[in-house]
Length: 244
Ligand SMILES: [Zn+2]
Image (cartoon, rainbow, N blue to C red; front, side):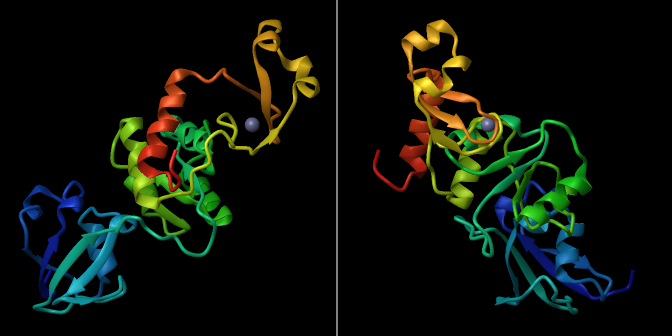
């Protein structure tokens, strides 16, 4: 290839995506003279969902910029919290992120999730149709052009994944308002209206407080596992906007 030669560097938070020999700072790259900077960045392994500011010789440019000979390019990660304009903040999670989906729902965050693998094209189309931010650890999925928006999930540990997503997008937290099983919204319910669905021990011990408007699952006060209580408490302490 005999195109223009540029210098390119990546911020440390993007180093996991790029080849090892491009992690040390500025390196030389020969481009084809026709590809956009977005394409160049992606071809080095960085999903565009993870690229924030792009500077050319210190000046901000768009992904459509076509690098010219001698330019010096700096690629930064996304700023946190990241704004996603154009629709209420809601998410779509791929098949590997079921635990994260349930934890987001526990906190009242709209998190669609299919436990069956419906495939990348269908996921991307769903993200576009419902304007949901696609969360995934699959860079191929995040490269799909149809996505409304997307974000790479940096850890494979659910605790860290939750902190990553809450810190990155700062969604409004409303614990215990959403069905962890189906993502439906919970409505107030009293014991009489759902008596038929309760086991006897449950009926004696707990007061019903909510029912899913979508799947009719019943939730009752006092029955939360201590682990879930801890997840909610920790999330509110670190990311809640109101004092707990
Ligand atoms: Zn439900």
